[in-house]
Length: 249
Ligand SMILES: CC(C)(COP(=O)(O)OP(=O)(O)OC[C@H]1O[C@@H](n2cnc3c(N)ncnc32)[C@H](O)[C@@H]1OP(=O)(O)O)[C@@H](O)C(=O)NCCC(=O)NCCS
Image (cartoon, rainbow, N blue to C red):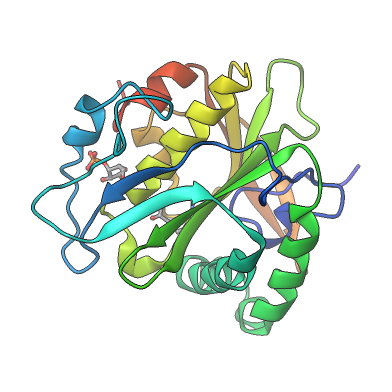
């Protein structure tokens, strides 16, 4: 059997990966948040307090900060987003995995190749893609994709395949907002849990722990010629994840 790819894995979305996006997809409603990419602001308590989740709480249930003015909208991806999604993926991989994944592999990554792969996957049923858009430039600055869990034991019903933000937007609560949106949509689909594979060397593993995930397993993943350790993180309480900015206990 193929190794399961981690959330931090370029090849985590292989040909058999289910996917669904675009105008005809069953997708989550749009949400929005406000952040300042030049002045990261982690005061997103307002997001926790302003609505019960993706489906309710008014037009902007994920307002992160009222004193900064970068408006970030989270919405389902459309086919025109594909090049920007691929660009985010390549930039984020190079920034995050340098020193973990070989320079040769990272330097050989091509936005065009990623775009082709994502466009193909967008047509597959059973998986979903949300993008975070910087509305001042109408630019995709991050994305999350998720869907049916792949090759896991019973009880793992939805998987977060990838979650990436451009580095200059880190630390402003956008990752948490994307993850909450994913959790809310999974709840709407009657899912009871969510999990993600994360490279063991990923410096951002603590983000998942901060958002309430617990490590439940480990495995290995092939990235180019490397075999890397990966950790499976699981969220058991999607209601809590969907409704809270920080659900760590
Ligand atoms: C990981 C990632 C999605 C987090 O998104 P983000 O918008 O930067 O994170 P947020 O601002 O929403 O942070 C939410 C909480 O997690 C914490 N957090 C975020 N990144 C963290 C890190 N690397 N280490 C420790 N805590 C972290 C924040 O401090 C915040 O906690 P707080 O409420 O106590 O302040 C983003 O940094 C990213 O895309 N990184 C590169 C790719 C990657 O590693 N993706 C995930 C694995 S595939």
